[in-house]
Image 1 (cartoon, rainbow, N blue to C red):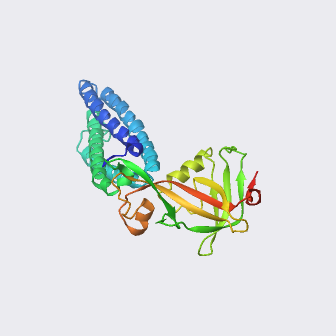
Image 2: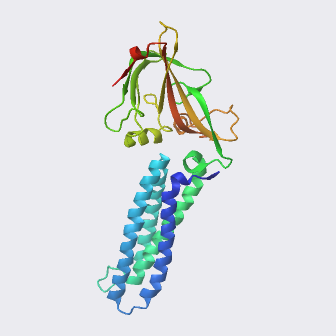
Length: 305
């Protein structure tokens, strides 16, 4: 397995920045140490502390938010919270043993720097250590397969259930195609229709325009987390039925799998894993709906506006 830097780069950069902070703080520690005036030394130390608050906490929060969105997982913030809580407890215990200013409660400049360095070292060690231990259990969140990847396509049952043969859902009514409006173009339209499943459920389906960045990114990034029964990323309308035959819809889903995938092993996305505790071995890439209608009936079943 190789690290999935597409998802982890914010955290990697942040941890690298914390390492740089420790080095810089250590160098400045010796500079502050040469200052005889305790008040001046305290002021210099506070400036270094403020830099940590801005980068260490502000940057850390931002990196966790971005990585959590990219990985579609709360593992990173949970690990960060636990590591931060433990590091804070260690820092407070250490600060209790350090010398204070004349007011009796403010730490002296050198003591303040040592305290923050202790917090950073404990936090960084715990965060990186715990993450390295649990990450292998979540391979598609934190790692790629070392042998490269390929894509495979299956017909789709409800949810992410891949099946070998096509599942036909009856088309109910017409397909509405919107070619104008906000974030919508004729070359990238919005599709909406209703279909009836084998179980009799009436299910509204839609395909958003890729220009609708917020909705498009949300749908694509949650493809591994939700059944995605109500939306698709691609639509094709084909007139291949005989006149009078009932139109229907067939769904397909494309997965990214390791090159070593033999085509026989059960596929397990993060959605499946959350339901059945199977071991995640694939990444969902896209879904497609093919709408089959009778020849010469396009205007009857597809309404373009």
